[in-house]
Length: 248
Image (tube, rainbow, N blue to C red; front, side, top):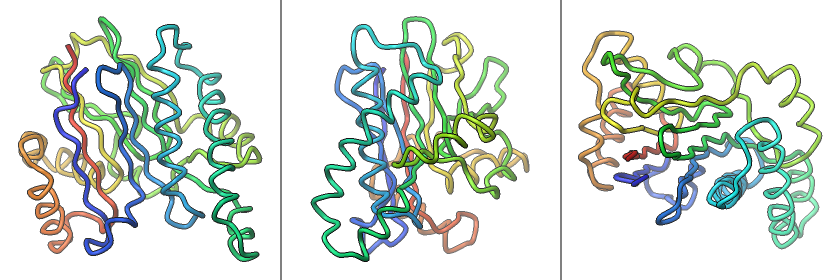
């Protein structure tokens, strides 16, 4: 797996440090991850970072576990202690402690490259997009632009959220394995919700897709494109992140 593009544009252009999106990979690794922290939860930027790093740490191992419910629980069991340690260093005031006690939340899109297939975990509204062998656009886990209007399922930093994640909300997230022969060309596009909504909307309206254009951009081009489409009202004002993966 090669990472051909990794581009991001913060919601507030003058405050890139506030960007709650994150994309993480390791050179020569077989796994990568993208996450979008929830703006209304405490320090979701850090939680998104730790989730991505925990996923790739687990799945870059030689004997990585199979991608299933247990793996999600494993990712959380690795991520939560790191996040709790980080919180202790910054939650010195009672107000911050109160905010932190409510939990932090983020999506997680994890990709594992295997010899003949690619496996994907998708929790929330960060999506993977690809063209199938018939030239049709496919996406996971959200497949229609209207689905972005619902509150997404997110991974929480507190165990109290697990009963919903693995219970009544389980049907809204999951796993998929795609034979590489069905990816034409062998490319996978990852994107957070604002861009995902835009791409699926364009496809549903039979309008030209921006995937080839985005794939050719540098960071400056991407930020200009995002700003222009926000100003026109075509793209929601939110942190926006895009990655292009080439699969051998």
